[in-house]
Amino acid sequence: MAKRYYKVAEHQFSVDADEDMFSLMQNYEPFVVNDDDACDAVFSLSIVQGAYVEYVEEMRQSEEGQDIICGHTAENLPTFEFVLRSVSTGMLVCSKDYKSAKLYLPEEKSKTHKFSIDNALMVLYALATANLGTTLFHAAVVTYQNCGYLFLGKSGTGKSTHARLWLRHIAGTELLNDDNPVVRFFEDGLCAKVYGSPWSGKTPCYKNMDAPLGGFVLLEQAPHNKIERLRGVSAYAALLPSISGKRWDRAIADGLHRTENSLASHVPVWHLECLPDEAAAKLCCETIA
Image (cartoon, rainbow, N blue to C red; front, top):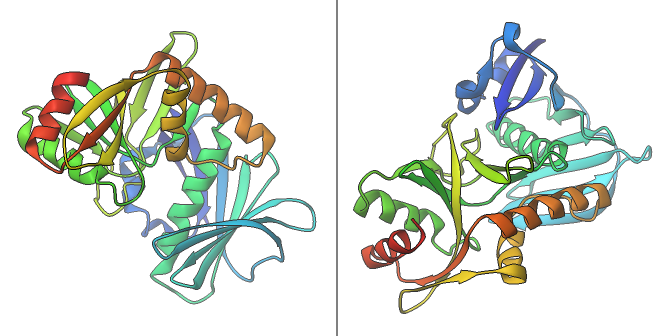
């Protein structure tokens, strides 16, 4: 087995796996760290092929034919089984502090190995950094005039569509990530940054770049275009559904709450009722930027 180091949003982690597994991880190449530059990792993942361990299910998350079944082993170690279109593709078993984990993949070669590797690393990253002022958002993010803007909303709301409208109609806009950017809040400077990541949904956009966070926009489909600023509890509530995390774990939930509260207090949050048109993008840009 070989070991490789990666850095995403200034957090390093390591992966131990056979070379054929690394060939499935091309989206991580922009985030590779040379061995000479490697430092303490926030977590380490080992990828192996073999039988799953037994576990007790706690809950499951389902979206668009993809399921993550969360549970624990007899030793009370956290587990996550990844299911794609009703077929199990892999199982992640973590240490209690999420600093190390092992991903079990089926013995036979499969196109679903990459699905499990990406999901395992996303889950582990979100949990291992939850108490480090770090959140993994389900959002599309663009950069404009050196700031990053996140578009939030339920699946199917039009986050990617709105991002494309900015790219098409607002000069100087660039796509940073289309599905899973990382946001960090720095208490010492009371400021936030948004980072590209190796996880970007259906649109391949794996940029090892960052920008000061200019604001969040919660999208809602409507027969008109209207935007308003959210504050206080409304701002906090707008962020909550878009942040990945194991909220029934008290330590994880507390870490996420601190970061969410800081973001809602120090970064502008907006609610945009909109059509999927040029006017919506321009109204949004003129208001928030």
